[in-house]
Image (cartoon, rainbow, N blue to C red):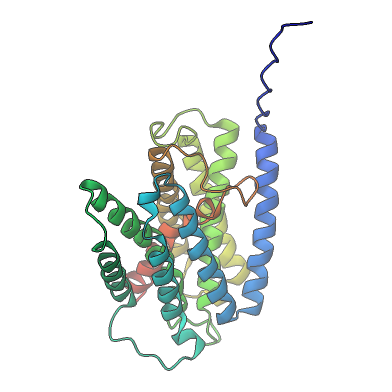
Length: 304
């Protein structure tokens, strides 16, 4: 009888760059198809469902990154306040006769704090762990819910097309196009010729060549948007298109690196696996979380 010990199971083969790119391209095509359908219909209810779903799923993935159950203690409170925040943001767009006394962001954070304290006072304090669990909840709420909420803020701006028809949703389309082409440009160029690392302690795969590809992709999307539907976004002239392409590309890369800081600090690779070649919902929206506020402020401050 052989006494040889069974050989250990072979490790799963790591997909090649070509396979990863193909999966990423497939997911991107599907997502762009859904995006196109959304903007063709241009229904506030559809925008509510999409933003609400991304917000809630992103928050769920965020809390799953924390293995310590104590760090997820207030996640249900965060989910509830997040849904309240999204509904309140979209209420005016849906024709609801609601007039909020002030910025809904501050009200949502106040409600979150009050509910967390109310839930926490019934348990024994655990030193710094108590502060950590509160900080994790508040950070996740600000990072995902408040930043993604700028999409609704842009939709509420009185933006019109050249013919005077409402066109705020086309500015969202512009935002998504520039942000995602930034991601694709960075990935494609970085994979092909990337050599010089940007910040290897945060994201080993990011290179300066990829950063150049990100700016190139943003410029293609920015000026391409002007060519395709420039009449719908008349505030964005060629000069603004150039400035926004570079500015949004920079903050899109920062948004990607922000999630890398989070994942690397918690020793996880992806926030999820629902989108082949991309990862999870957080991997999908990480750049938009940063570009959304920047476009909103640009439209308010620079374009008036």
